[in-house]
Length: 270
Length: 147
Image (cartoon, rainbow over all chains, first blue to last red):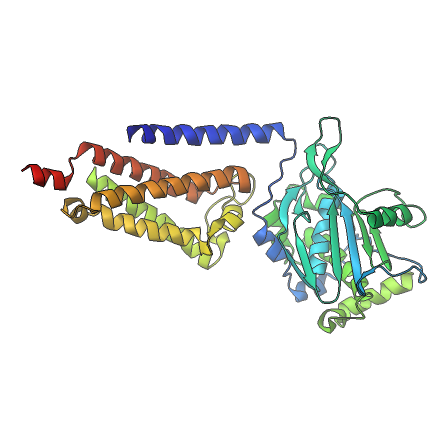
């Protein structure tokens, strides 16, 4: 019995030391749990806030593809494909508006917590990972691929996570090149039903600098915050683009005057 | 020793109720940092904050209530032979559960909840008191048998 009393503090000390050692060994630790609350907040940004932000400020909306581009769909349902990586800071930023926008058409579950690499620009940008997450919607299919973790690989780069399918490889090879993008081969790559394309982050990731996941999620409900301007503004642009795929379903989202106005701007830009 | 045990159990009960209220209302009411390694919201809203559909905060309240009952002076004086082993078993189960929660915080959630840590420390102290009492005091039933 005395042994147990002595053993417990020793055991806890060992666990703390191992945890600290693991954290020090990793330049960008990833936690797969603990994102539920932030994900819930990102999925439920009030419509009044999204409407107040509109296109926000300083955002890059998705680019319209030529009208004769064959549609991207799964079983007749339009598909949105995201290809990114956990280490990538621009992916970390872009994930936020993707979650906000797609949550208006369906629901995510199992979004994990992650952060961008500590050794890259905008280090340790707090975000979610699509790895292990599922998305359900009646009007759109979402496929998220995280090709690499944020853990450095022994030979350089980052450890692989998810492999691309031949179709996704082809998508990158066809559209992640000039003239569709100014940054060939860049990620995040977001293909919206082969009608709109976004490569890179839609807003400046620096607005997320130093903010915890919870702080970012809470800021989304304050239309005056730079985070809401960037994330929600980009999300509205993505929402308008997705409405172009779904034949304006659901009406509550796509007939919203702000979204309809942005959709008109996206169309005229093409 | 006996009065210490009821104080520790009451302390654990108080903090558990605080955590349960936060779970019921808004986790952000917790007076605790919300960024970095110390992040109560991250811990109390994690997947590990619910076991078999029951929030851990509620389990903490139930466990603390039971320990308060078993550590009251009347319970220490009681002659029923099942009270001492039940008290030790409950204290031990609480300690094992706390070790799992510490593992979850350190390796799965990667964040520490200060209020949870207070409960963990109180649980360990309560186990130590109950265990020392178990060692130091003869079994009531055997005492009676020998008398």
